[in-house]
Image (tube, rainbow, N blue to C red):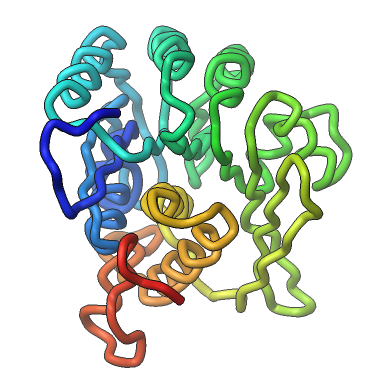
Length: 281
C-alpha cells in the first residue's frame, strides 16, 4: 500500500470483532499494537454480546460497510500489515477473499481463525468454516490456530504434522499451532510449520492462568513484528510479548483474566517495551 505521508509509526489494519470486555478482539489488537510501538487501524467485523465467561450473541457488520472502511483507510493512510480475527458471516468472508486476491505480496497477512469462543459459543459453523478455508487461508502469511482450531480446520488429519500440512497445502505460507500443553513437563508449546523448513517448537512455562484474548494478543503482535522482522524472529518476539502479557493478567469479571499488554510499564523486571522498529535482539 502506498503511503500518502511519511510516518515513523507502523500501521496494522485489524479486522476483528468488538468484545465489550476489552479483553479480546479489536480491543486486544489495538492495545497490543500500541504497546509494541505501532498504530492499529481498527475495522470491526462483528458486534458481540459477551462477558469474561462466554459469547452470548453475534451481530455481523455488513460486508459493504467493512469494504468501504478498508477502501477509505487505504486511500488516506495505507497500512503495513493486516491482522484478521473474527469473521462471522459468509458475505464478509467472500468480500475479504476477493480483496486479498489483489493485495500486494509485500503486505503480511496474519490470520487468527476464531472458530469458537473460550466458553464454547460457536463462531464459525461447518459451512462457514469451509468458506473461510477457501477464501481466507490461501492468502495468509501465517495462520495461528490453537490445537482445537487446527483440528477443526483439518478434520481428516491425524496429528499435529498433519494439521499443519493440510493448512499449508491450502496456501498458507506458515502455520503456528499454539497452546499444546505438556502437564508432565509443565510447559506450553507453540510449533511453527513452513513450506520449506523443519518444524520449530517453542516451549514456554505453563502458566496457571485462563486469559481472555491471549490468541488475539499473539496474532496482533506477530502482525506488528512482521513489518520489520523475518518470520521466525517476529514469532519469537511476539511470543515473548504474549507470554508476559498473560503472566501479568488481571481480573475484572467472574471468568477469564485479561492479559496486561502494558506489563512493561508497571514491572521494572520486564525492562523497556519491545517495539516493532527499534528492538534488535
